[in-house]
Length: 95
Image (cartoon, rainbow, N blue to C red):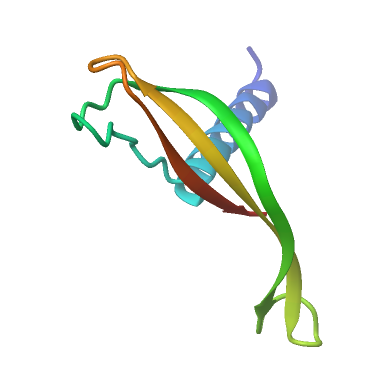
């Protein structure tokens, strides 16, 4: 293996690591637990779109002082493997 190809491979590996770490930091994972028995052994069984709207972030983005982002609200249905009961939660995502 030549030195330029080793440098290229090292840079490529570094970029992949930076991408996944950045994605992990931007999108923290929230652990959902059952509302009935508090078990973390739940599975999402349905995702329904409730609403979507455009929201403006003040002071960032364009020189006019704001940027538009899409805000989507979902209603998620989960089923618990421990007690077998179903429950719903709302999730709001802003892109």
